[in-house]
Image (cartoon, one colour):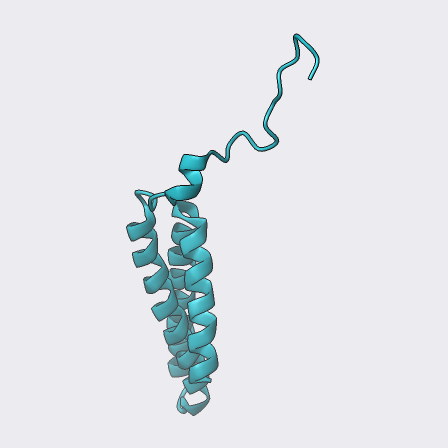
Length: 107
């Protein structure tokens, strides 16, 4: 090296201490996990309700109420997933993968 020059590390954010100690979970991970589980359960319930709507027989009013209930379940599941995404991306990805696996098992 020439005199007067300073060597800058390639990745200054990775230090030996950071490599030995993984980062602790975020403060909001537990809340995000609860929101994700709620979203998964409601999403699966909405999926099953739509699947069972083929069995709903009767008047148009009964079918309309059934579809309204399915839409409300779907909206609630979406709100729970968005809350999970806003709190923690890694928990959101975990819950999305879990929900896909559960849907594949149920369907």
